[in-house]
Image (cartoon, rainbow, N blue to C red; front, side, top):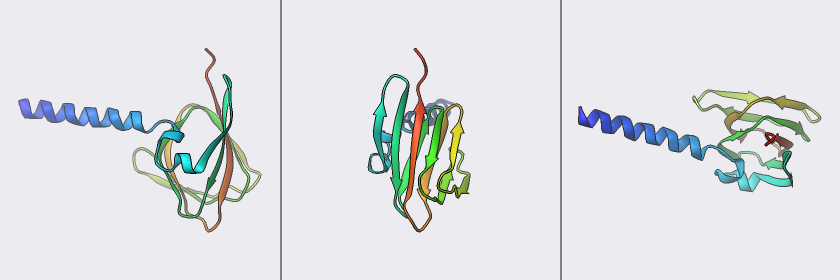
Length: 124
């Protein structure tokens, strides 16, 4: 019984640690290499992102945000449950994502994927 409790607590700790580590894009593997902050104030954080073919960004999250695709992209997006989808937004496409989104990404295309993402900050 004691072993089961310890195993449960260890699993819970690992799950909590992975949730904490899968946060800010600039603090996960691949994030600092692909994402650069171009504006950061009390309202928004704007990121210029460039992923080369085959380049990956580890699991991370964003608050509500907009994304503008500067180039055509082909991205494999992996959700926390392991499900993957391939998105192929065209240059000039703009999207809005409400609420927090968590995912990993990989450029599975043959060209650079360039996008500008604006994260909305909550009012204090």
